[in-house]
Length: 470
Ligand code: SAH
Ligand code: SF4
Ligand code: F3S
Image (cartoon, rainbow, N blue to C red; front, side, top):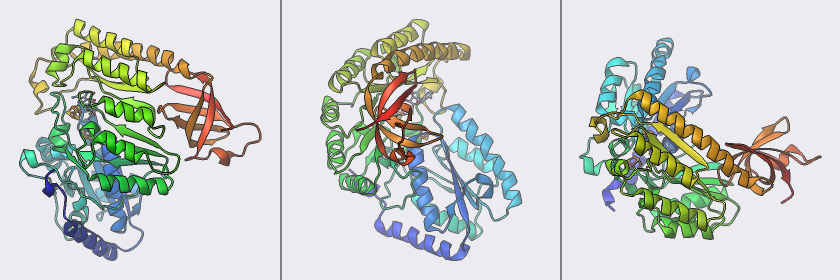
């Protein structure tokens, strides 16, 4: 582990000092709005950005239109994600005209791509600053610069590729939920799957210290958090003082009822040891997200995934065998360059055979600068047809698989209810709707409480049930 990946305490303290000055300058009543696109990593980052906003004296705005500071935390995973940001960012022009004091910024994965940065700088001159995925901790500096009259600042790492990425510990955090929490344990990705932009915009893998991660989880459990997800693009490559399975076992060992989840596992690194830790500890939720991407070996090789269809299926079988009733979910890309009909059929067959509780199906989207974007592309109509075919199969498989829960009593973390209908999630990450037993007060199942629910009906993506005594 390179020592210099950690931002120094002095640097962080300097940012906090700037934040305090901003707070004294802007006065009371100012608010910030962070618009988050993309994955959980971005959601976790936005919660830290909001923590810094609070330090600078900005409250949380309920809507974009009324905010004094607006940050777009962007995603570049597929073209559609980028187009969404580009169209929404256009609305900032009008808001800026109406409120000259408004401060606007763009960060996240799009900000790390030079062609997108140029686009923001040239076509969106009302954006005050742009910053990269590992420059979050500099937010106070950037806001102070705007207040001092600087326009169009750009803060990206600019380091050589192999050193891209730092870790900033100790940032304040304003969490969206009082009972569900994200904990980033590592950042970046070294895998360079040939279709994927993430290694290019999130830098090299770097892990937080195990003690810092465990202290954060312990504090969350003490504060009453019930559903804690450990995050990393590639969590199984975590390299702190502990390996990932060891970290997970320790994270699941604090007093209290809570669930631990983790995302995302790469099949080549998802070890038997990890599965055994899950099987041994009921606090680790029975859900495993294991992206397969394709069920054909030639395509997997082209994707640089470094496992075969057979190896994937063997891992999936081991997980299902060891953790009874576990929910397995996956990601599939339809229409990777040069993918033939027969090759896609093998993916459909693998999906059918493994049996996924949930499948995230994507139409391949060329990402500039990635090897796959230079290969021979599959026709758009063919890609969307394959997508539709796989979705139809998955709907059927998910419905069949969910039937295993009928009549079962499941632990459910309630998300609260209105009009007597409550919603929640099971450990398998299934959405469940439930009612209370006759005469029960709503408070027994208020948001953030664990309850036991007997399943009375199942469909492809939802369960229904009635709460019962534990
Ligand atoms: N680190 C995680 C998540 C990566 S992004 C992992 O390795 O699984 C989430 C999913 O988006 C990927 O699993 C992949 O299925 C999909 N994806 C990534 N790049 C894509 C692209 N260019 N086109 C379509 N889907 C893509
Ligand atoms: Fe992208 Fe592959 Fe890294 Fe996942 S493992 S983030 S798909 S490069
Ligand atoms: Fe998107 Fe970046 Fe996440 S590209 S999926 S927000 S890592």
